[in-house]
Image 1: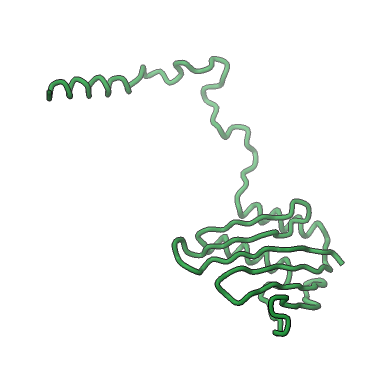
Image 2: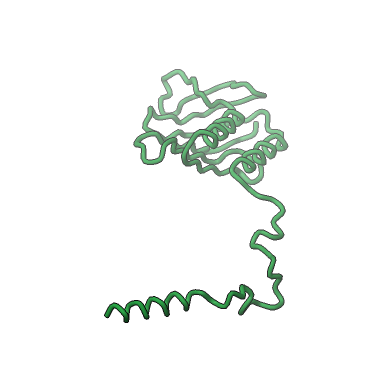
Length: 163
């Protein structure tokens, strides 16, 4: 029985060795030195997408706008409607708690870009989407620590309206 197993193992190992010719069975018209990344001239990373979105936002020239975002987390409800002119907040209301004084950390779209940048640098998982025309952030999902409980948050931009 032991010799049968040794013989079977030898046949199995030799079958996996191949001919030593890496081009055997390859398409003769295909360049054997080509790699799957040949022809790619630009690499997209979360950081480059953020830079592109910031540039798109700047190029859109929206300096007076009203926007609304919701923050979902293990925290007090936040549903902010903010009017921005230049780099300053003109008006802010937390629609989830309208009687409370609104003092949001994120006031402008640039503040939200900064939040994305910090999350990309410091968090375990980050998912972000941008408006393809203006570059505005549409959503940001952050998990600071993998497998930790209640450290995640989501910011969903409900709308951006130029004034």
